[in-house]
Amino acid sequence: MFYTYAIKSEDKNYIYVGLTNNPDRRITEHNNKKERTTRSYAPFKTILIE
View 1 (tube, rainbow, N blue to C red):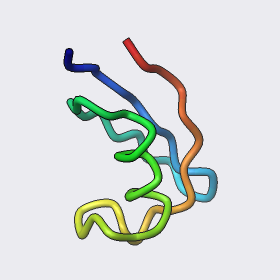
View 2 (cartoon, helix red, strand yellow; view 1 turned 45 degrees about the horizontal axis):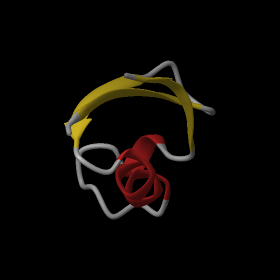
View 3 (spheres, rainbow, N blue to C red; view 1 turned 90 degrees about the vertical axis):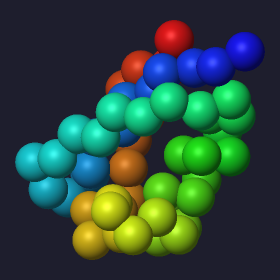
């Protein structure tokens, strides 16, 4: 099963939307700056998982 997730930067005006089969792992990767495209916007708050 795949999930759509949206996360919002806590420090900047930035929202990222992604698709994954493991939202908890993926959001942790974003918050740990392991994703190059969102690294400069961390930390994130989850706003949607569907």
